Image (cartoon, rainbow, N blue to C red):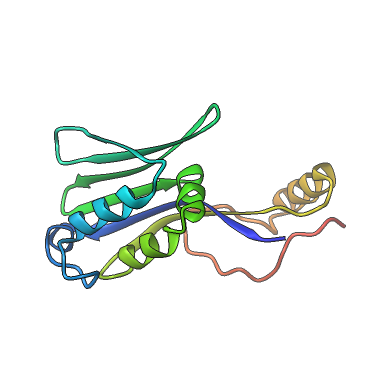
Length: 151
């Protein structure tokens, strides 16, 4: 069993995006373009407003990495399929190192864990805990205190 990163959203200050990163002394934006360009399956498009999009195709599915400005921050979003493509091309570590090379905030992180268990008992346990008030789903920060197991 392994945990898979299924979505990652990061915001960075606009000044850092256009300034030099600690990743080879280049502008962060140029370093991101270089890193994504090395992921062999990526096709690139620019949206004309300073936004960037790299797409990865696998069969009928498409994943992408998007980078765009919103106010005083730059938002970088990566789907699960794009992260898998970066992992396959051995560029995931470089991508994550680049994101962590300066001030940033992880705004969304989805992780998946495949377990060899039937889903209905797990969903029933989740429903019972939710109805009893023992489980709360909010946008507030949460600390992981345990794992859900069927009763």
